[in-house]
Image (cartoon, rainbow, N blue to C red; front, side, top):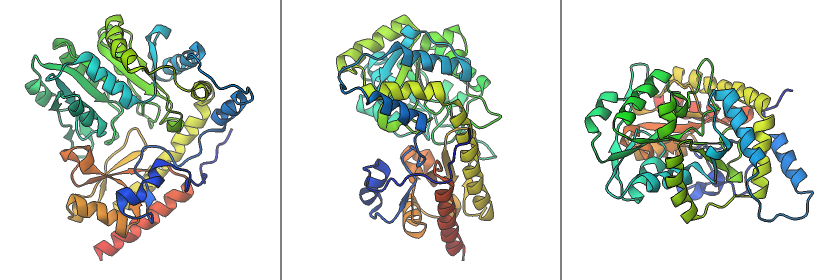
Length: 393
């Protein structure tokens, strides 16, 4: 089956977050929003068809999470990522950020240290500080080609007896890295040595570009399984964030019980009836759609790459291995962070995520969500090219 990503439905006037908040965030509605990490690509028809079928029954009441839903995800993870979870390992969650906050409360106490590796998705450090834990920043190292890796020496020098939790972003948002097994094993060695629990956010794990392969942290070894809480789901992969459903896999019984103590107190409950069927349909029927989507996304990225190569002294595109988020080095433009954001809004008409929001290591960078239709990507390229040409001139 061939899926068409050349166009997509309009999200104007649909209460879509990235559109509804334009005036508030950018000071104008006359901007193409490329910030929130959902896709301006239609949610797959097999997901919507499953929801329509469920709506043939006239009662939408309380439901338990069906075991078939988790079994579909477990089978997907086994086939796609060579990691095996048991049914009892799995918990429903409405979002990865909610799961992260639960983990922080479950595995640390006030004053404990939590490791984050910046630049990183802002809730990683906001969540730590909101729980009155100490933020232990282990900034990523940027290599000569612009890509990033872990700074293991820095991490070794900072860990102490108060360090209890590491928040791992894998694949990494915003820098687009898909961590190699040997890189993750260095992290694992330190965490085992110091009895540090790993919360592994793997929500982008299906959005990987060949020849790269995602390595789930829990798959590294039996010891890794025992210290890992894995957050996964359909939201990014199949553009289903609006269904507010993800999952948490915790193989270790003691960790799971600690997590559940907080989880039950918050009362996560069982989510939405319609989300259950959508989640299951995505994992059962989504393989071909996802493969074609990734081909489309790679084309969009290379369009952006070709544009950046026309202006090498102004902007540089970070190499990407996973996600649909381009991390653009804009330091050549010579702007301060506010000026840089204003340049994209007022000169290019594009609403991006400012790099400084991902930590001070993101200063001078911008994050661009290229998960859009072919038609919209052409508009993005046209707008950005015009702005860069005018700036150069």
